[in-house]
Image (cartoon, rainbow, N blue to C red; front, side):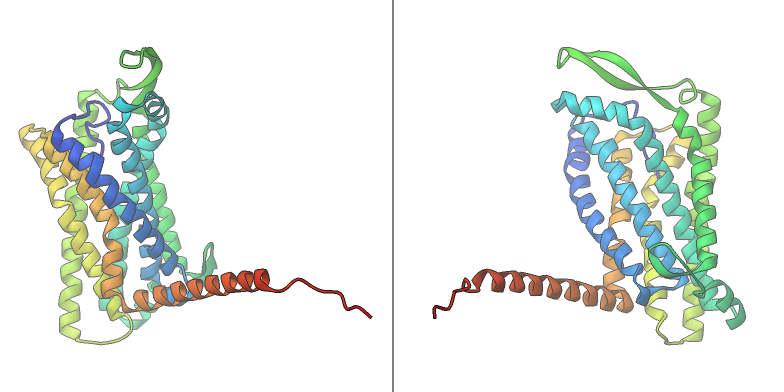
Length: 342
């Protein structure tokens, strides 16, 4: 549910607001987000953290890393094109790949958030038999030693749906050879295809389908699910080891909804009133990156299991590194062997 790359790939704003938001704020937030999501994916992939809910959160962290990287390329690199001919060339060459990849990662993030919220709802409200069936760990796969079979099946379906839904984006732009006036040399640039400028396609895919699948639909669904989770937790007033994970997911969903209010507003302004505001689009793109970057803060602040596991592994890694450095130092300080004279 984000207004990613809607008009930016065709016409980029060069205003001061754009320079501040895209050239400074987005890279700073994005770098911190990559570090945080890397730590999140590492922690949630540990054996001690395995649960169906944490499987989704691990996948969400991975998709958010891709979102941040592609946003950095498509927005920050775009702002640097006027400063380097090489950046201009590689931006044009890689855009047909990075553009659909970023939108696919965006869809993955939205769908995974909805799936994790539904999993949390089942964990909180369902009977034990149903809860054990859909929220238990019973198989092994990939980097997580004990992977949840049902969660993996859901993630596989989500990946397939995201790729199919975003496949039209692969046919929206193409690369052309051109003459660069600023650098006085042959270069390449990106242009929209006939599909990207087709009014019927824009109305159906970008306006209506996008609003239903990626905008209003997920937000309304998450509001309903989140409300049901909160009501159920207050009604049951139970305390167990899963409560911190449930609270974490509720806050992640709240962050998702908050960060997507502005993109949703931009969509409705365009859909209902044909209003396109470059400043709001810049800010909504920044909110996409903020949403993808701040989940780690919620995990660490409110997830007791996450915080304990992360501290354990970081302490273990740092201690092992110190031991290796001390061992190497000891070897260097050993006196050279001497021969005994008889």
